[in-house]
Amino acid sequence: MMLFWRMDEIDVGKFQTIQNRLGALYFVAINFFMMYFQTAIATFPAERKIFRKEYNSGLYGVLTYFISKVIIEIPLIAVFPMLFTGLAYYGVNLNNDIEHFLLFGLGGVMICVTSTMLGIFYGTL
Image (cartoon, one colour):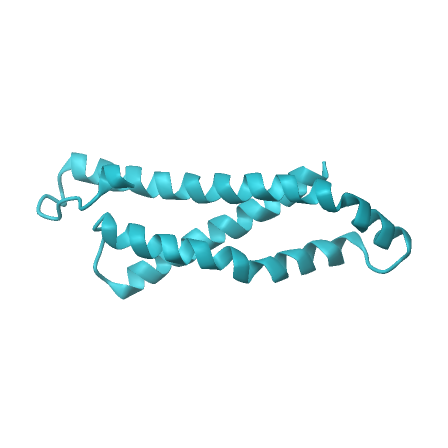
């Protein structure tokens, strides 16, 4: 993110400024996706023995396990993206509006939740 630190707001309409902002957004999105995706892929194979034991004994089904795992991990997933977007949003000098900042943070959290779910799915395969 240091590459995009304090981009100028003076020439907002210039093509290079738009490219720089899109590059910063792309970097943040890919960073969130890959970090949570790789973590989730490695998680389920470690939990597979416990899941099979509890599934075979009839304690819960696959859908129940998946939904409960995602619901429990949402607060943990939401903490880092909100901290990172707080630093990145104002560090890159995107837009000094609280509504845009909250949308940016919500987008980051949604990317992390989606990548976690995809990682769990691919980890089960």
